[in-house]
Image 1 (tube, rainbow, N blue to C red):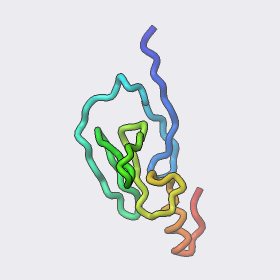
Image 2: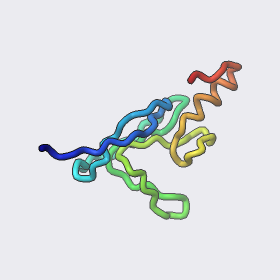
Image 3: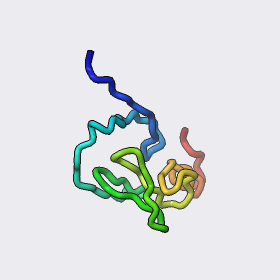
Image 4: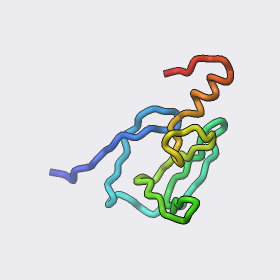
Length: 97
């Protein structure tokens, strides 16, 4: 039989659930890219080091992450989609599920 791959769920920047391949043997060096999403998070892809303000390393456990910019995430420093709820509330709309 072939090699077994482990897929684990995680939330994407829009709050949806994606499956990520977390097999460390499949990691290949890739330059880090940073994308600032309008009214959304900062997306970082590739090889990078993530550290707390104190300098302590933070293990993101994946190659692509979304960092919170709105300050409302319960998973800081990672985005949990709270900006969508906050934006809809400010505009007087009900958040979409």
